[in-house]
Image 1 (cartoon, rainbow, N blue to C red):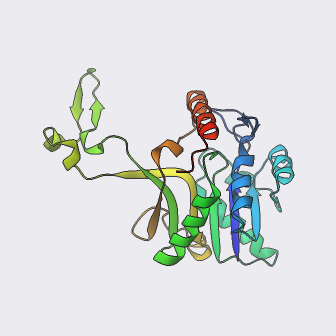
Image 2: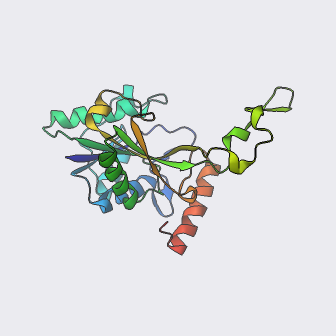
Length: 233
């Protein structure tokens, strides 16, 4: 059995009501729910929330909210893994025992059903504990710099000051859209990123963190362009 869990707490501070704020004409969370529904992968699509307004919107969009998340798992410092483990435990209490669980972030409007399907295939074919969305850095991280208190800079890896960009190893980062995992790995709180995880690579133009209002405006503008050109890559 496969379930999707969409974490969506109500107390976002930097962008109030972030999970249900209108994004390109729809509450943000409904894009993630729609992708999960379109994939036709899941026996249950669950929203884990502590907020009744989010719960109502989630149900209207086609998800289920079989429980409300307890306050101790809904503060600013709660990581993802215990939230998903809690959801698995609640489903097991109701007689539903999932084998594979996909966490889909509520603020991932760029997530696509095809990516979820590919992630599931990679999880199974690689026999990994997790398979998560990732993308490449647009600039070599080996050429990164830190800003000193004096206002001057120094390279993080000065040994690469004269290395050509094309000779540096390509590096990747978490795309922050979804994480497939076995239910046992979630329950055991295994690390999401590490030797037991496989990457589901996405193109950079479909990856955008949304942590500030500036991020939001950029994401919405990019989303509108992709909608108009019908990008499938």
